Length: 344
Image 1 (cartoon, one colour):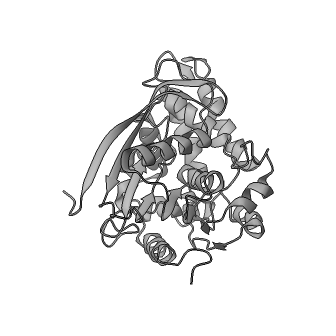
Image 2 (cartoon, helix red, strand yellow):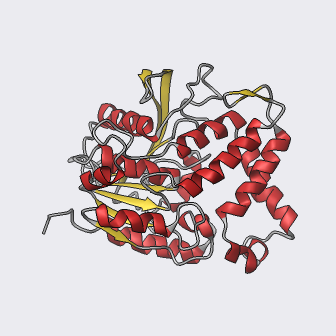
């Protein structure tokens, strides 16, 4: 039991018209909150989920001594479409070809407004695909977001990142169980095994493996055991159709995919008024420091603070890495305490 208030629920969105014009029938968002909403509704931190993650996977950093303090903030975790809790291929027969980050954040805006009367966020905090959603919040609702923590994420999915994602898609598509469109007649066990092993080479850096941290820090007796327990078994817990759908969401990530920006990324970045903390991992192989560095000149109020770590992409989600967790905690807490842009 936590020492603070929590609540969970499912928000009914009805038949949801998506960015593509397709309809997601009887759409639902699962959510969980930590902490208590202030009378002025001014202590809200939105914390979207990441690839393949469900809200319990993210709660490790919430606590009085954690990155997000539930005694200070009302923390709302909306489960991303496709994660198996909110509407997903695994629970929605007529799944559309693409559900985007745009679709997710517009549904989240409704959740906040209709459930709690929340119109403005103190901050959005996100890691990985959660960071993509946080960036979308800042670009699509600039008057509703005071701050955004972009932890190992980017405003547009980079081409090299897309190469990684298309490789994962191709592995799932090659499975004999794949019936087309990211749907499967049965769970593709062999393909998911390959999927996990490919992922292991991208999510952690070359330096991580050179330092033998899979054994010394994570306790694996050997490489094959590590690949099996940390990667194959991890992804086998999720339906392949859900994993495929979220790959499509990730690959399509682009804050400028909105009529007001027309695909002009610079224009979208210029429109952001929130204070941004860009926190790429120094050795992240797909959300690279260079991507955030290229965004920085086009942002009004942003700081680039790379995570000094050899843990690759996982540096931004250091649930079992005390050094990176301490860096994350200290940097994010200081950022959340700063005044808003233009304030004294």
